[in-house]
Amino acid sequence: MLSYKHEFHAGNFADVLKHTVLIQILNYLRQKDKGFCYIDTHAGSGDYSLTSEQAQKNREFDEGIGQLWQRQDLPDAVSDYLTMIKRFNPPTQLKRYPGSPLIAQQLLRPQDRLIACELHNTEIKLLARALPKHKYIKIYHDDGFKQTLALLPPIERRGLVLVDPSYELKSDYRQVTDALIEYHKRFATGVYALWYPVIKRSRIRTLEKTLQNSGMNDLLLVELCIRPDSENDGMTGCGMIIINPPWTLAPTMKTVLPWLANVLSQNNSGSYQLKILAKH
Ligand code: SAM
Image 1: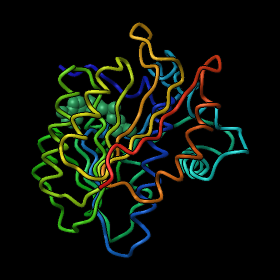
Image 2 (image 1 turned 180 degrees about the vertical axis):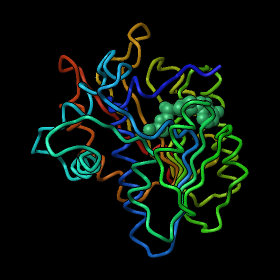
Image 3 (image 1 turned 90 degrees about the horizontal axis):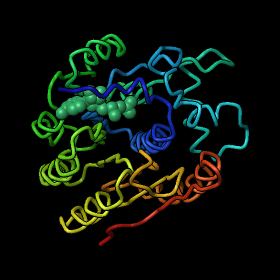
Image 4 (image 1 turned 90 degrees about the vertical axis):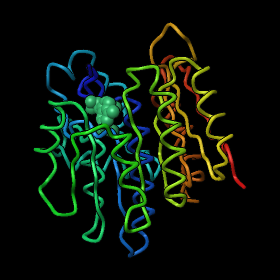
């Protein structure tokens, strides 16, 4: 039974990090003319109203996109992100927040493809409405972990897979690493971006170790915490592990992470990590 709804969280600090990284990777892939395939294993409903009852409940976007909306002093990558979110909104008002499939769709060219998987019965209907009907866009109402495995390697032999589950089940932590190891066996040159929440630090250590011990040879971790680690304080931070990251990503995030940690942190208790987990 799936109960997670991204609408409660859309535009929060975790989306800021995830979607900033997503845009940087897609912009890198766009530098070559050859087409690529973007796969979103856990796509969500794609388009979120920030005035809805759900979004207004905890107004998580106030601590994410809301902190950036009026600022002029953004690092380039955060500016790319804000420009993207502004495309979905009237000039001065923040009313809507695009999810990862809609952001990616804006950056695809005619030679690229988008594949989005979503399991939830309501979210998939909303997603089908949010994405344009086009032959280069395919939506699967299915388990994204399994469906993605069946789609690899993509015919283009170039691509990005975003793995962004809701971690409703503890088993998701195990399932993400199992899935990534299998994906990498089928498509070793693909770029993979795994998002994770920092709720219990020991789970993240296990995640890191499992991927490090898997033999993958190019792994980057980026993490943003808005509060100190605590097991009784919900999600205090979040991060991404990127397999085969563009070479430009680490230098970009070196500027972005301290800036975000400073701007989005609560009570000046923010922190960040930028770690190369493997480079052979
Ligand atoms: N990637 C989206 C974004 O950045 O805008 C947010 C996705 S949200 C964190 C996770 C989504 O995964 C939820 O909409 C949930 O219904 C969906 N989901 C949960 N289990 C799934 C599965 N096994 N396969 C595909 N989707 C799943």
